[in-house]
Length: 573
Image (cartoon, rainbow, N blue to C red; front, side, top):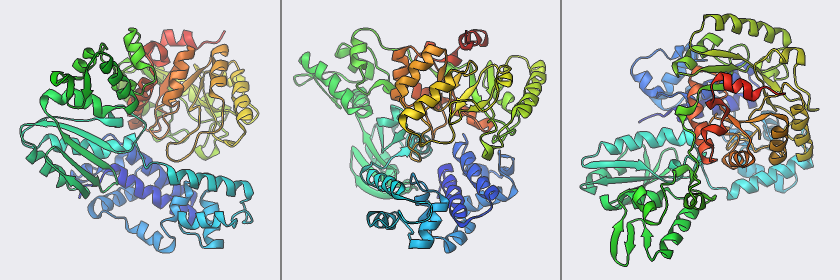
């Protein structure tokens, strides 16, 4: 049975949650959390590394003990330590930690005082008003919990894009090996690169559908076969991901791909154009009456209704059809356009590599520059740096730059925005930096007005460059804090500041809507990875996906520029 990185990461995350509820040593808890992040973000399959006898302890943040536990998971599908902890603390308690307003300490109070072990028990107690009088709770927290439980009850179950990739891509490659398959591609929201995925649609062309359908339903990760037919079958994987496989004719490949890529709203807009031309457009092709006239390629489908090809990321009915008609489609930014990364951490705070190691990884990508942005002192949990330690790091970067050829390490920091809008370090050290990434890491619950004013006041500082992960959200984990993004963007424009598209797959912040808002306002952004290890630099592709969904072109992105041009852009008058 195959074990994916996401499954190993889930086990370590669950273990960390339960240990934290139990009151275990914070450093031990953090080690498992870091291991989960490392495993989830690795570009290569950990199971394959174990099978090949690789030394897992050489992975960032993975020592011999964790390497042994990873091997145990791969070989047995379980972790003995997790089962042991579950025998003391119900595993379902970990689900409660992710509820906004709760954390390990409050979850422990719920368990000890009311015997609450799961979401259902929490809902019953909250509805009965039993939470407000518990230590550390109150009426407002009880109300927030009820609102979140109500939202979750109606929300569609979705999976982060990076997690969906780990299940979808191996399945796609497996199907491509079926006898007679000529083409296989994933369509749907996955192809449009949405930040979360509900299910997977795979299209295949082949000489005979029987071999590929049989191979599909007997895949070793299938939990349930919902249907099996000649042209369509549906399975549910062990991960809970539903996958539809459709076999389409060669002459219908383009029209089927256009149809099943979606979005529904985009398809309706395109079909309206077809109707105006007296045509019928569906997944089988473009027809005039009963006569087939197009459908082999997507380009052919769009051309038939009078449009140029529209990139999948744009197909949301956000004005792309009108832009196509008027010759105004954006020439979207690509990964090849990126010349550097403006947000990366090292061992000096909560990263897992040295400056030299991060520099070597960036150089291997062909980057012109990499900004080292370790945390400042307010982020105590990450061993944030004070002015003295930052000054020492700047000296180290100067020495490294003297030895480097072909690229430059930029002197920077991820500077906390304090509650009053001041920055976490004095200007006499900030002025020594090439740029700053200024972020909010605490007091996320301020009112919309106060949070907005906090950021705008921070932007008044002449050494504020880029607003990092501007909404503070964690996808499927933490909602964005309340903030008037339009006002913030306008303030950035007026002051010569910029916003970040944080490419970390659990953030993707700015979201696609705000990326487009920035473009429409003429505000440039930085696409940065927030890398905490060398492999995290690979997250850049997720940031580029998000930027493309927001219509961004190379000219809209700071780090598509050479350093000399970028330096001029970010220097405030």
